[in-house]
Amino acid sequence: MNPRQKLIDTFNNLEIEIKQLSHLLLEQSQLVPFVASTFILPNIIKGEENNEISHIPVQKLTSHSAIEATIKLINLLFIHNKSEEVSNKSAIRLPGVICIQTELKTYREFNALISKINELKVQIKTIVTQINETQRFEFIRESLHGLLTLNTYRTLTSLVDIDTINFGWANKKIINKVTKETVLSRLQASLESGRCPLHIPKEHWQLQIESDIQLIYSLPHDAILKTQRPVKVQPIARVWDSSQQKQTQFACSTPLFVFALEKTVAEIKVGELHDYHVDNIPLRNRPKAKPVELLIPRLNLYIER
Image (cartoon, rainbow, N blue to C red; front, side, top):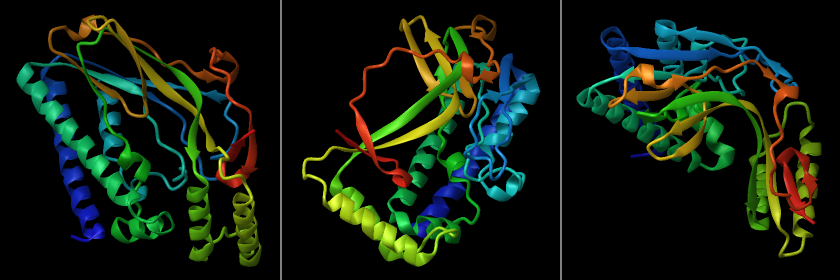
C-alpha cells in the first residue's frame, strides 16, 4: 500500500475510534458519577504566534460543559472546523481532567478505545515523518487537505485511582544534539527543493543556504552541535499517586482521563489552573548548561564552545 493511501486509511480508522470514545463519554456522563473541569485558554490569532506572552487569562468549565468541550477538541482534526482567525501554527490547548467513576468492564472499554486511538495517532505521525521533510507539506495537503497535525498527533492520557491532580504552568526548551552530516543534509535538501520564504528573493535565499553550508563544512569534525528551540509557556498537570508514592508531571494540552475503580470520584482531589502571569512563575534550580554559541538563528542551531 502506498504511503498516501495508508495515511488516509489509518486516519479514517482514527476518526471512527474517536467517535466511539465520544459516544461512550457522553453515555457514561449520564449514568455514573463524574467530575469534569476544563480550562479555556485564549485563542492565538493569526499573525500573533510570536508575540511575547506575559498573561494568560483562564476560563473554567465544569460538569457537562467540560465534557462537551473535551469531545469538541478531540474531534478537531481539520483547519476548516475551527475559526479562520485562529492561527494554524499554534497548538489549541484545553487543560483539565475528566474523572469518571466506573466498573471494571466499562473501564476496559474506555481503556481499549484510548489505547487504540493513541496507537493510530502514533502510526499517522510515523507515516508522515517518514516522508522527506521538504515534501511533507505537499504530502499532507494531497492526502488529507487541511489536517491539523498538532491535534492529530497528540495522544490521550489515561490514569486510574490517583489521589490528587493539580495544574500549573511551565516554560522550557527542547534541546537535541545533531551531527554535521544531518545539518548538511537538511541544508542541501532545502537548497535543492527550490522553495523559499515569500518575503525573500529566491537568489538571496539560495546564497544564504550556500553560505550556511560552507559554515557547517568549516567546523571541526568533532564539533558538538545542538538545536535549542524555546517552547512557549504551556499548562501542565501534576499527579500524585499514594499507592506508588510517586508524583508525575504531564503536559496537559488535552484533559486527562482519570478512572475511579477502587475509589469514588469524591476521593480524587482536583485542583485549579490559575491565570498565568509571567512574574509569578518560580525559577527552579537546574544543572548549569554548557556554554553555546548561536550559529544559524533560523534553525535554532548552536555549537558548544
